Length: 143
Length: 385
Image 1 (cartoon, chains in turn orange, yellow):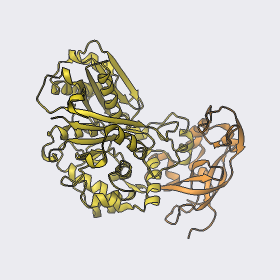
Image 2 (cartoon, helix red, strand yellow; image 1 turned 45 degrees about the horizontal axis):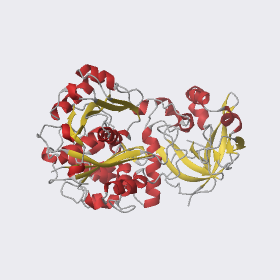
Image 3 (tube, one colour; image 1 turned 30 degrees about the horizontal axis):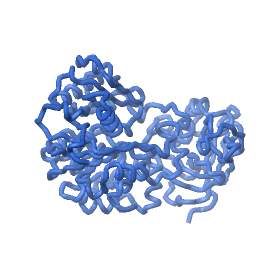
Image 4 (tube, helix red, strand yellow; image 1 turned 45 degrees about the vertical axis):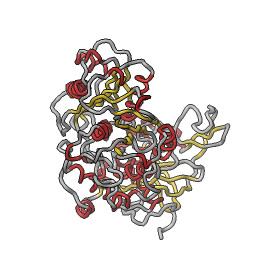
């Protein structure tokens, strides 16, 4: 699996149901919600802030700089329609705003050199129809 | 807790065969397990006045259907919960509270599903608010979600694949002597390590095997139990914890610490309520839908230190002659994934000294837990003299 075109290889027909379910703000502008009371940022669309309970929020751009928290490499085809990108790696990262995200890792498919806390950059891929989905890249070679 | 003060006891249990394809309806299996439990308690169906069960993705049948099938009449208490694997100990605890409160005298608790041939967890889409986010990233199945947690646990504690393998091998050793277990073939560490990953750090053997089946037990008012066929088992204390809950089953966006299970947060409350410490527990039946979660649960309840669960298991402490026989039926990994209801029943079976070849030497206390990630429940059971 190379860096370019994870979702292109997967195919629009495979990800179409997810695109329908994801918020437009995430797909088109890559924004999250910042609580206007406590300033914490949350990825998931929720009617109230899970940290302070208040309901006011404002959109904020999701910052692209992140650190690696965990990962899994998946050779098993849990869903046959994902065969085009198999095996693939999903990374769990925390960005500089404290947002936790799960994202496909764009690398060469082998991740034995991934390290806890490794810097990652979030990058958006054009998946067609004017929509974008984020992926993660290591920003420095692993030690 | 003196035995005199105990009001709620587990008076009987029942289980169907567990299989890959039952060829039966869920209702049929539920009715069989519940009827067995009622008979085992020395009761007639008409004496049952409470019933509770749990399900996931509509994979089971409602209590009212089972009650109607068994000719159980007027119920004073009924609860169908859509919770999942965190529920089993919680349902027992709740049933005990209902009995203690005088709402009902005999509450049947059951779990029934065609988990292999029917609705399968890994193949049913979640409907919660975080699902689309993780699906889009490629976290398409529950094993992948849990894998990110266990990977983090391994990063923080230094645990490795040998520690995961220790769980699998130890529990398979029990399962070789358990005729109910779906996985009974002996497995050593070398064989385990030779298997391919399905999603790192998990191999197939690290994942509980989905099965068809049903299990039930009866929680009774001790004063209303006339049968002396088996020792009574008291529900000494219990706890529910959902400290890192997300918007849906597979959600992992709000949780901050993937390296600890709910047990780390629930333990102090549980021990305080029970008036006990881990050293007072004779056996542990701990939720193990994935091998790594058993490590977290052992450490979370304080049976060993942080990062010490792997060596604890390898040293034989969780074996039949160890200091803490654990998952004595082979666990969900080997016996089958009945969503933890079989885990509770194994504890009762051991405490009632009915475990046959798997019997631990006269245990009097057991800790049972259900769940292993953001939420879960636990009860401490005690055999009454």
